Length: 80
Image (tube, rainbow, N blue to C red; front, side):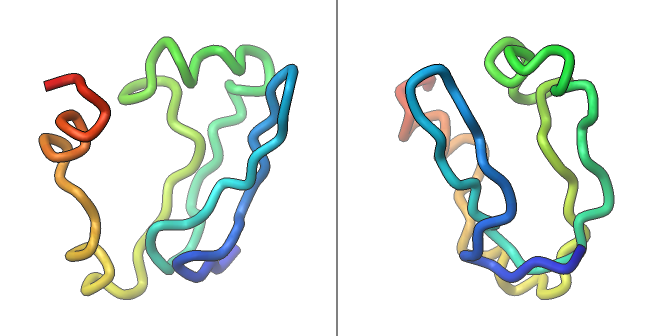
């Protein structure tokens, strides 16, 4: 599927709520992690490894400039 930056592409459900997952960049979804169906907690246990949700081939690399670096994200969430 083709997706546009800022649009919803999936729904993440928990026991208490459901939240939309929004695309940070435009592009084509090239892979979906089917392993999450059997083990959704993998997202929490391995968010930077086996817990990925989808992979996107960006169509506009300039949109990547607006994203945080991994180091900036870690500071934002208090991991640094």
